[in-house]
Length: 250
Image (cartoon, rainbow, N blue to C red; front, top):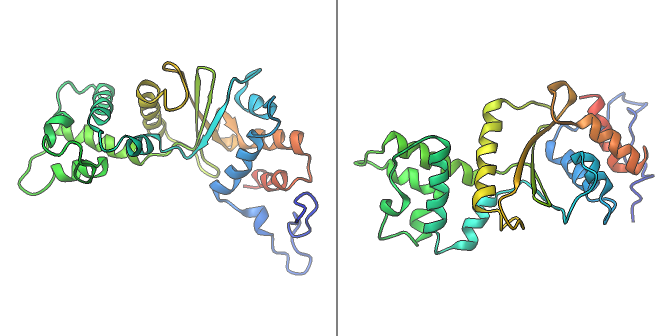
């Protein structure tokens, strides 16, 4: 088996012959570095010390970690074919978030096809409402457009512990704007109010929306801090630590 701590296949210095840097030094792929982050957060069980340091807490209770979380999509899938109540509750929350007092309820859209997912899939509803000969109101367009967006959305990192729901939006080389973070907040509010049991909570949890980016973007947690944590946990020679070292050169 390849020893990741001493492998000569991944060298941090440019080649003496070509002067070309290795891909391990300039890899900008977000999912790649997130894989090493996930490994870091799962270390030291059952004490979970790296996870505690990452969250800034003294201890965690029954932690559950998920990446690229499509909770609404997957919750919809396991509730088929009886999805009418599920979709209605989510749409009502969306309308409340957008301060929309009146919109066409899901149960009134396709009363004869409510439990036929092939006809009422969230990705199709707004499209069907826009078919030739039909008129869609601004309120309906807003609610069902947001439903479609939430269905497709996958916040990057989710950590559940005790009665706290931490959601991290992650960027490696770029930053976030407030509009993106507001969309995430709306999605997590739906999770916290309607899908908390799916996440293992007994009641609606407290939400924490956080960012993980390079230090220059002023995030809640920086990749530079993660790199320092990795060095403390694994040492400088560990493969994942060396892969995280690129944060100093991005």
